[in-house]
Image (cartoon, rainbow, N blue to C red):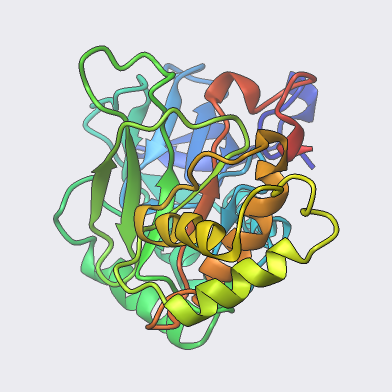
Length: 301
């Protein structure tokens, strides 16, 4: 199954979508965007307004007790769900910053959100459409799809690094409220390494469980060599910074980072390192050019 893009035209699955009333074949490359295959708009790319599906290029999302690979399945299911329907979309032909035409496909949006294959989202601090919020509340209450293991207050939908071309601006991570769909940009000044994880920051670290986690990690044979020189207290400080700041600080040996972050993001995602015990959202960073093809990042394979 192709979720990140087709390798040739014959492999593309056409879906019939009415674009401003005109029946048109399109190819859904994921559950919230498509490319037009024929007609006056052939070749144009679309971004669908009001909702967001999980990234389909690999296992990068995590919250609750989901593993990254488990959650990535719902990105694939969101793509399949979009492909098998017949949808009606309208647009005034405005474009987003990536040059994609913005389309409103209300029935598709409600269907994806109600099935737990997408979440309601705006790119502002305004709440999402009321129909979508009703559908999402129902999906969360009934633990459908991505919400089966709980709902974090905010879902991380994108990560950006200072290594990207930002000029005099700061990079940001976008977080979307699971309650009303509004989003906000968490500005930062981190140079995020490929396959490094970031999480939504929490204000209530649990010192006792963090210290116990630090002790357990130092006793883990798979991590001992990479954590050499750290004490329970110094590792606990690093973990606390990860919980409260969303990113893990400098390690004695950076080649230990992925294994350590994998263990810590599970604990953070479960909520076991904060006082509230609420699930948190984490995400793995991979630059756009490293998401597809033979040279894609190792953590996506």
